[in-house]
Image (cartoon, rainbow, N blue to C red; front, side):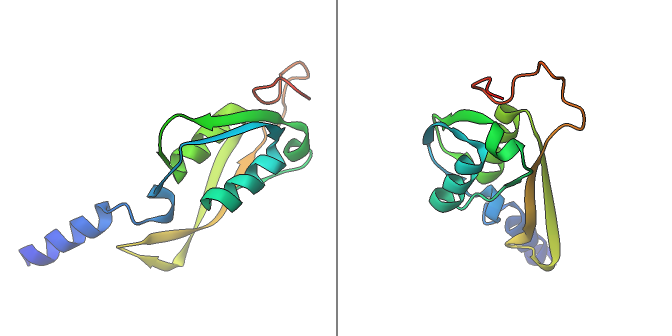
Length: 125
């Protein structure tokens, strides 16, 4: 019984879940949010969908000075682009060791952004 409990705790805490794996450091120069999310997907396996027109209108530079988990990268990207991060999970293939796979990851724009609010770190609209 004790061995089973220890195995269970270790399996839950291991960083084997997709979003808990570390990536980076990384650096991307000024790009549209659409291009940036495409590059993050290609280079690091970090997936995020962004609604139009935000995906093409938001311009930003994005970098990390150390390795971060994929989840931390997504959270930083949401903060830097002034969007809200939403992660949906599929319980169908969930395991204790590898967790639930994110079925979607989206960056959601605010419902009523102020007309004068800068979009992205570069302040471009």
